Length: 340
Ligand SMILES: [Zn+2]
Image (cartoon, rainbow, N blue to C red; front, side, top):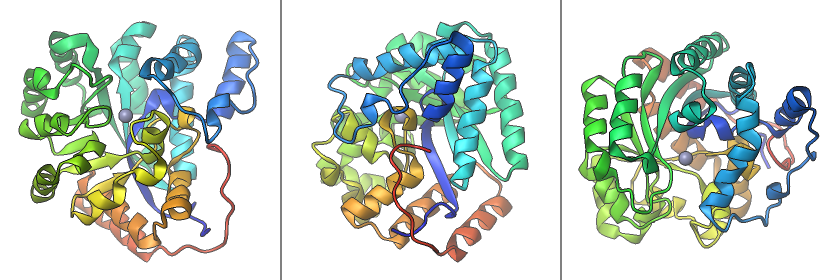
């Protein structure tokens, strides 16, 4: 396997509260709560599958809430996620932070936004551009979504909103008012769609002028929709291992990344929740090379799509694209198990 650690990367789909490194959580749980955790959690096993979405969500309650609830926890997670990206030479990242979780933990939103701001400034000094998206939980309904959107739209550190959570019974069309409010206030809007349900969910989102979709995996079931995504250049943030572990696809080999890519739809590669799927972006790239015969030029093309969509000025975009174009892999490297 080529060494991909130095490849300039972009990641558009990761959740702050699910993207820390396990070793950092181990240390934090011991320091804050005197609780020891295993060196490797059972769900890092390659054969592990989450048979229901609730089982996955419970990991956040069991492992993230106790950390976030401490006075320094939020900043510790932020620092760790950003450092993990920096070590992979990620140059641009869009990080979703859950407003539902901020509320559940009880930190004032204003304080959380200040922490995000200071972390983004620190990352910028390290050569990493971070943009934050406020994660809106579908199951809280349209009124709460609008209320949250109105709150975060005043904050310059928030680049946009990202509708997430259980798709079943909560189509994007229910949240049109919140989307419009965000767009009218200069914010971007992203929607998780077609991850857990069929292509109609993606149609709904695209019908609302959404041009950046989280997952969008089930688009591959609908040739007409694929043409529409290609014609409108709707970007899909694909997360193959996440889809495999949550049983949203039959197997890793069945993930439609190549079919969507070959149809001319701009696709990107992402880790989603590396702390719970046991694989970061670099490792996902290695996995696609090993198990799906992805080439370096595939990885570069998908990264190019991300840089082109990034919320950055044109000079920074050009610099990232040139850096990526000039990069070539060097040494051989073994694939490590779990995010390092
Ligand atoms: Zn997600």
